[in-house]
Length: 481
Image 1 (tube, rainbow, N blue to C red):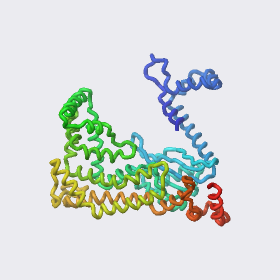
Image 2 (tube, one colour):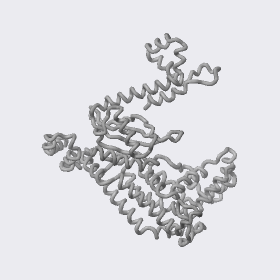
Image 3 (cartoon, helix red, strand yellow):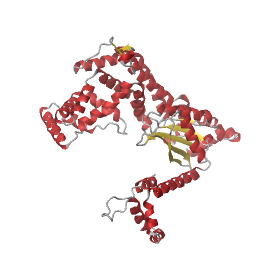
Image 4 (cartoon, rainbow, N blue to C red):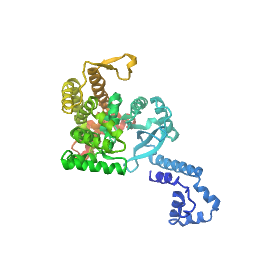
C-alpha cells in the first residue's frame, strides 16, 4: 500500500511555473532521489534520451506504471497464497464521482503459519444488486486463478447503502460454498452499525443524524476570524457571568462528530443532552455575532423540536444497551464466550425496551420538553404518513408516527441486523475456535468442541485424519501444557 501511495503521489508530475526549475514534480524528484541509491539506475537515466526522459512525466506513462505495479503486487500476493484456502473481506466505498467500489482483501495462513491480510484491489461496481456484486467478486477471483470453492470465511464492512446487498451476497456465496462461513467483521464498529441501521429504518432518524454534526460544527467553528473574535468575546462574557461553565465549554469544543473511536456518537449525543442549555447559548451567540447566523438559527430551531428530543433520548437508550458488547467486540483479546453471553443480554434488553419501554421513554421526553419549554404534540393528532405528502391524504396519528414508525422501526431493524451478523452458526464457530486460545494455559481448550470443527470443514480433512483427531488433540494439549 505504501508503494501504491508513492505511485499515486507521483502522478503530480508537472509544475505550472517554469521559473521554479528546481521543482521537477513529485515523480521526477523521486527518480532523482532513487538514483542516489542505485548506480545502475543513475547510469540508465543519464544515458537516456532527454525527450524520452521527459515522457516519464506524461499521464499515459504514469497510468501504465501504476497498472504494472498493481499487476506485479497482485501476482506476488497470489504466489504467497499458493493453493491455500482463504477468507474474503469486502468493504464498500465510493469515489468523488459517487461511483460505488468494492474493496477486496484476502486473509490466509502463509507457509510460516502466520495469519496474513492482503489488500488486492478496488472493483468498480456498476450494478449494486446482490447478484451483480457476487458476479463481480467471482469474476475478479477467477481472473486471478482463485476459485470460490477455496473460500473458508467471509466478512463485510458495509455500513452504507450497500449493507443490505452485502447481506444477500454472503448468503449466495454460502449457498455455493457451504464452507464460506460468515463472521462479523470486528473492525466494523457496532456503534457505527447502530447509527447506519437505525437511520435506514426511518427518514426522521436519518435527518436527526444529518443535523447533529451541523450543530456540533456550528458551536465550535465560527466561519471567519472576525466572527471568531466576536463569538469568543461573547462566550467569555457568558463564562464570567457563570451562564456557561468552563467545563461545558471545553467539553463541547473537544466533541468531534464521526470520529472512528469508541463512544464518539454516544459521547456526542450525551454531551448535547447534558449540556443542552450551554449548546443553545453558544448557538445563540453564533447566530447573533456570526456572519452565518442562519445556520445556527436553523440548528436552534431543529433542537427545540419534540422530534429531535425524542430521537436523542431514544438513541441514548440504544447506545447504552449495546455499549458493553461494543467494547468487548473491539478489544484485541476478544472473548467469544463473553460476547455470546452479551449478545443474549443485548437481544433481551432490546426486546424489553420494545415491549415495555415506550411509556417510560415518552414520559422522559415529555419532562425534558416541559423543562425546556419545547412544545409537546398532541399524540391523537393526525399528520401525513412518513413518505407521503399532504396531497396524498394518507395520515397517521402522532402516537403511531413516534411509536411505530420511529421507535419500533429502529429497534426492529437493529435486532434484525444483530441477529444477522451474529447468527447461531457463526457464534458457534467462534466459540469452538476460542477453545484454541492459548491464554491462561489453554484454559478454554475442549477436545470435543475443537473436533467438531473437522466436521464443519469436512472437505479439508481426509477420513483417516478425522478418525484420529481426538487422540491428536489430547496429545497436543498435554504437550503444550
